[in-house]
Every structure is written in C-alpha cells, then in structure tokens.
Length: 507
Image (tube, rainbow, N blue to C red; front, side, top):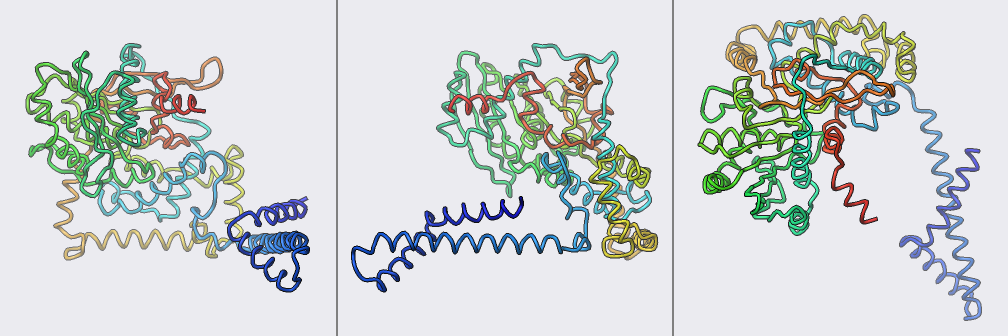
C-alpha cells in the first residue's frame, strides 16, 4: 500500500509539474528541441503531447526516487542521533499546543537561573538533561491529574463584572487584530468610538509598544489599549528582565514594562490631565501590554489622575508586593487557569525546581498510566545506557554522578573570593532575592474546578489579589500556553472572540 501511495503521489506531482513555471520552461525547451528535429507544422500537436508526457514522466520518476531515498535514510537513522529529548517529537497535544516549547524554555531557565537565584543555588544541582526529563514526566503527571483549586468562602465574581471584563477585552483584542489604522477606525465606529491616535507598530528595542487612543463622546470615556508581544513563545524570555526602581521610589518593577509605561506616560499624561474632570480614562492591555497598562495606571494615579481604571488581561508578575496590592482600587487583573505568563517569577521557578528535585521520575517511567510513547522512548534510551543517548538522560550512573559532581564543584568555585561570582555579585544576588513580584491590583482568578455532572472540569471565578497561593505556582499543563491567548480569556468570560465572528461573517 505504501508503494502504491508513493507511485500515486509521484504521478500526481509529475502531472501537476507541467503547469508550474519551472515545468512550463522545461516543456518549452523539450518541445522546441523536438520541433527542430521533426520539422513541419502538422507534427506540432503530437510533439507537444509527447513533450508533456516526457516531462511529467521524468518528474514523477524523480519524485518516486527521492521519496524512496528519504524513507531509506530515515529508517537507517541511528537512535544515537537524538542527543537530547528536545530532538524527539512528542505525541498528542504536547507538541500541538506549544507546551513543548514552554517546557524547553523552563528547563533552560532552571539550569541558567542557578547563577542568579541564591535560593536555587542552595538546592541539589541537577544536570540540564535530567531537569528536562523530570520536567516532562511531571508534566505528564499533571496531564492526567490537572491542578484543581478550591476557594471555600472566597468572594465570587458577579455577572456584571464578568460582562464588563468581556467588553474591555474586545479593545485589547483589536490592539492585535485590527491590522491597519483604517480597519481599526472602522471596528471602533461599530461601538461608537472615535479613533484619536494609533501607533500600529511597536519599537521593541526601545520599549515603545503599539497602542491606540479612542473616545466615546456620549459616554465621556477615553480608552487606551496597549498591545502585547506578538510572538507568544518569546514572552518567557521577555519577562525575565531585571527589576528597576518604580517612580524613583523604593519599590521595584519589571524594567521592560516600566520603560514602556514611562514612554506612554510621557505621551498620555497631558491628555489624561486635560479630560480628568469630564471623561473616564480606561486602560486595557493583554500580556506585556497588560503589565505596561497596570504600571501606567499607577504612574497616572501618583500624579492625581483619579477618574481612571486599568483592566489587565493575563499580566505577568511585574511589581513588588506592596506596589501590587496598593493599586487594587484602580487596577483589575484577570488570570485564567494555567496561564504560564502570569505565573513566572523567581519564587515560582524555585518552587518548581524543588518539586522537580523531589520527583521520582524513574518510578513514573514504570507507571502504566504514563504516556505510552514517553515510556517507550525511555525504554529505548535505557538500552543504550552509557552511550551518547544514555548519558543524555543521566541513565548511566557514572555519567549522572559526574555531572552532579561538576555542578557542585562549580557552585563551590563561585563562592571563592576573586571568582566571577565573588562578593560583588553576592550583593546583587541578595538584592535580586528580595524581588518577588506579584500580579498587580485586585485579581479576578478564573480557576479550574472539580469535574461536574458531565465529567468535565468547570470554571470558578474568585476575587483575590497577587498574594493568592494559587497564582504563585507554575501549573504544568498542555494548556499553559493556550490559556494565555485572548481566545481562552473570551471563553472564560462566557464570550466569543469578535474577530472570529467577523471572519465567520465574511465566509
């Protein structure tokens, strides 16, 4: 059957080839060469047909031969070429949802962060590859048994606030999806808003985000929507920036988002001051745009702008606890379920490292409930213990212990005076250790509840703040990246992404 499929594919591609630009050029050359040989107008049609057949047949044979050689190479490829777990394509939703990329970034972050987080350096060092496999097995555990939160007696979110959040999420979404200024102007008019200004492209090197300003004259409202990062995969790297003093005070904030907020403050303070007696100012943003919007709201409040509120969707932890809790009357953050972006901090990374250090992945590899593809892959690696692949996973006791000994020795060397991480860097470590940011403002946490009557987990919504323990832990899940997207936030707010509705109407 596979041979027939390859032959059919070769025939089809060979036939289609003649209609492509390279195919036509080949046909043209063949036909003209034949005409030079068979002179005469009566022979032109038969010659053309023969040229088409010859070109198609040659292309089909080429495709068939290439496919066969490619298949032979893939069968002969030795297992040892997979020198890392990241060279393996995982099954199911792990690859499809982008969680694989997140796990890879987490493994690298955990490995590199030992040089910057004193709390990590006190834990038993783990080689990078062992961290990776522990991380994947722990992920597989939570794939089967996802985290379920409970808030008995917690303050629930009323339907009016849910509707309001869905309303303002619309503005944050179009900061991404409008595409062009004329289109943005058109969609805003559908809600009776007038577009005053739009910066459609971000200047990320200068921390100058894309944003727009729109007004509703009847409602007396000014909306400022700040766009987040386009490439979601890069967000984890973006949010590991060093802290800086916020508003020249003692409290610290995320340096990149603080720079973006200062850029926006310089351009919007005069507007906010001019309309403060007549208009309500509403700041909205998603992801990094949410963090910038929250910090901007704090800056405006410090300058006496009181008729203002910020709705931050999926914000990173971007400011210290005192700063995060002091803005609860003018900043509302929304965090959905397993969203990884709202959970990354030094504290959560250290907690995850501790969990991985204690996790018995070898027992998990023998558990029948573990994903069969993962178990199969691990068994294959065990058969080549001591080889390139065996040392990759730390399956060779000698290699594993050697890696740990080297990691411990490096840690001891770093403590010696005169080393690159001598006394001066220890002072920086002490300062970094004190920076444990939180999600800003009051927080609408939309969490996973236990399975209901239909057997599917549901949503719970509770009003809390960034100190909530459920927000300070990384949830390893196939949804941890998907839950960060605006589509998921619309779903969590019992709404539908308007851009999807618009595209449906156009079909």
